Every structure is written in structure tokens, then in C-alpha cells.
Image (spheres, rainbow over the protein chains, first blue to last red):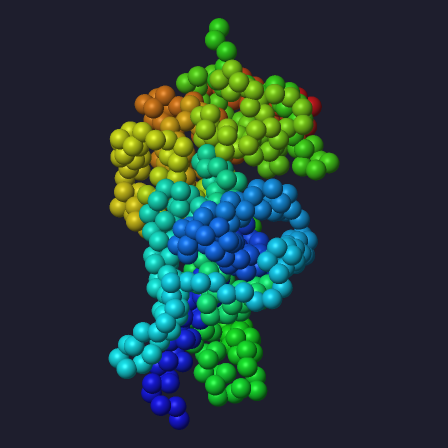
Length: 291
Length: 257
């Protein structure tokens, strides 16, 4: 058996990993809810966003926080443009075309990142170096920061979608797009803004993951695990997504510890099991959306 | 004579290669309730969707308040002052009743007037006030219809497009809802273009009526005249015209054929 300190430490690593997955998965789910598109390039948005933060905060010498803010604005604008210039033209085509477009977009982002920032891993200086002792257990500051930022962003997003007029209008557009048009809601602009929000979340996730994984053109594949977490939780349900990602994040370090032979596979095993037992995910949206 | 509030001129709308409405013209004057009757598939809903911009017409013009509005986006048209209450209510299922109503006022910024209008909706449909916090998906059909009409009113439109408000409702509810439709017209000075299968009710509340069949207009007249016309009586109201011997005139044809 593991000593209790190790259990807590592994559990905390899991929670922080799960929080990072949740940040990425929220982007998947928001875009899916708004447009019924699964953006397979979303993990690469995260990777690219991380590099953009690196450029602004170190390349231009802005420092971490200002660099993060500027990078978020830039990536938000990029997300807005990706929707309004590219994705909007393909809506209504077959799911296969949309799938291939988003996958191809991921390839483009990876290649572009490799050409701009090189193919070798780089490190991003964050203010989260060092460790903190909590009740006799040392925890990495970067891990604590991920959890904290995720909680803050979840609260911010919840207030935005539940309390502000624009947020409620985004919900309305996702629930019944035609009726939203009839109400005079500028549905297209709101959808592009959802893409912008998703890109900003991905950028923050990229910056927060950088101290853990290093910045590398291939870290976008974390997005696939986030997607698995979203599906486990019930794609389309935001609380479910967060829950699913936390679940996958927590199971991962333990299974890697106990079964090192199948390192990194546990997320997909959880996904398979959940899909067998509860095909709609853990938290099911009770009311089917109209076609 | 002043120009009409809404005018459709020779509008043709297609679903792909299929012509759904063929050269339809129609006017709605300020302050009027105008009814469009017709059987399933006659093109009534298509007509409304063309008027509000959800469908683009291939030919013809849609003129609203002196401005050509055909082939514009429906959200733009809505901001011009046309509010569409679509067939089958189409409320936002996961939003509460009051959130649904507030979405109707999305384009407005006059907060005090919006709150006043919200109270007006609750006065017209008192039941909505009691369930204002409930999710729209859990409302009954009649409540959803009230919500849809209330949401349409919250936009404070000049023209309300009502698509089959009687669909699937009990006769009591139908008369209740049409009472409100008349009050919206008289008290709030909203012109209404009403599409209905329930010809009797529609002709009673409206000033003028149009009859559509297979995508074209076949009759238009004052509603009172239409109510008395033999064709309407027979084909839309189901009143059989019985001859002296009590036999149905089985050879009778519609006059427009």
C-alpha cells in the first residue's frame, strides 16, 4: 500500500491534471454546444496559445501576466476569425468534412508553431516556481496554480453564461438557433465570440501547463484526453465535463503508479468503460436539442 | 392612402429546386390583423419565413415600413421591428420563463420600459407569472404558446408574425389566446399577420383574409365577406351546403379552379 502522503500527493497531481483537462475540454464543449462542431484542433489551440504567451511575455519582455493577457486577446481574436472566416463557410456540410477540416487545422497549427518557435521543447518562466508545504506534504506551486485558475475561470464562465444578457443569449442560440435569430440576437457574432472564449481558455491552459509539460509542438495531444474527459462526463453538459475531466485526471497518476506498463492509457480505458456502462456520459442532458 | 406597413410583391420562394410559393402578393396595413388561411403545405409558413428573412426569396420584394427587406438576415429583420412567433412555439427549452421573455427584448436597451412590458406580459398571461422561474421545456403546450407570444411581444415590434398559434391547443385555450392577440393589436397597437388553419377563429379576429393553395394566393377579401363565401364555408369551415332534398352537392367545385 501507498503511504497516505503519497496518496494525497498523487491525488492532488490528479486534481490539477484534471483541472487542466477541464480548461481545455470546456473549449471543446462550448464550441460544440454553439455550433455542433467538435473542434479537433482545440488541443493545438492550447499548444499555439502557450507559444504565443511565450513570445509576448519573454520575446517581447512583457513579463508573464501582461504577456498572458495580450496573448489571450490575440488568441481570442484568432479564434473569432477562425469561426467568422473559415468555419462559418463549412457549417451545414457533412460531419466528415468538418472533422477533416478541424484535424487539418490542427496540423497547420503544429507545423506553423514548429516553423516559428522550433521543434524542440522550450520552457516558459512562470511565477509558479517552487513548492508549498501544506500539512506536511509538498505540492508544486504550478499544480496549485492550475487548480486555482480553473476554479476562478469556472466561476467567471458560470456567471457570464447565467447572469449576463449576452451569456444567456449564447445559451439561447445554442438551444434554438432559428428562434434566436427571430429575437434579433446576432447569432453569428455570438458564435464567433464563443470561439474566441474557447481560444482564450485554451491559451490560459497552455500557459498553465507549460511548467508541467514544457512547451512543445506535440502537447496539443493533451486535447484528446480532455476530449475523453468531456465524453466521460456527458458531452454537452458543462458540470459533467468538469467532473469527467477531474475523474480522468485523478485516475491517471494512480494507474500510472500501479500499472506502469500501461502508462497513459488509463484515460481511454475509463472512456471505454463509461461508454459501455453509460453511453450518454455521467451527466446526461435530459432534453434533446431540436434538429 | 398611406403605404402599407408590410407588402409582399410577387414573392417566389424555393426549397432547392421546388417552388414553395409562386408569385404571392400581400399587404398588411398599420394597425390591422390580417389572416392567411390554407391547408397543410399551402405555403403559409414559407410565406412568413420569407417575410422575416429566415428564407430568401428568389424573386419579388418584401417591403417593410418603406424599406426593402428581402434576402436580409432574420436577426436584422427582427431589429427593424418584425417579431416572428414561429410555428410550434420554439421556446428556448433550458431557459426559464423570464429568461425566455427577456431574450425577446434582446435588441432593446430601455430597461424601465422592458420591466414594464414584462409586467404587461404577466398581466396578459397571469399563469406565466406563477411559473416564471420554471424551465420552458417543462411547460405545457398552451403555456409554451403563451410564452412564445409574450416573447414576441417583448421585442415591442411594429408587426407580429403569428404562425399557427392554435396548433395543438384545446378550444378554450384557443379562444383565450386569440383574445390576447386582439388585445395586443388594440391596446399595444401592434399590426399582426396571422397564419392559421383554424379558419373560423382566424376570420373572426382579422379584418382581412387571404387564402393560399399550393403556393399561390387564390382569394383575398374582407374577413366578414370570406366567412360568408361558399368556398370558405365548404372547404375551410366544413359547413355542408345541403340542397333542397338534403343531398350534398357533390359536384361542387371551388370557384377559383
